Length: 61
Image (cartoon, rainbow, N blue to C red):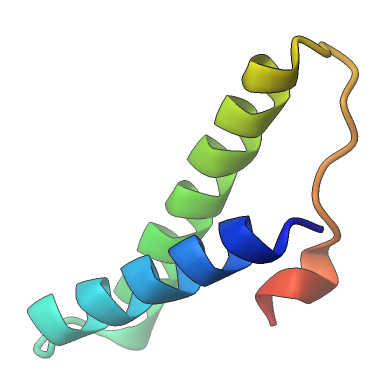
């Protein structure tokens, strides 16, 4: 798992949480999942590998 990718996602998660204090935790979780999916897709496209492995889910806990 890419440490930088994890740090970026974690930072983005905290930004989203600050900006959405009134939102439910489920809403935030969905936003984070979307960010993970988008970043994973972007990473796989960047490496030019269509069968690239997804980052270890443990990274995002």
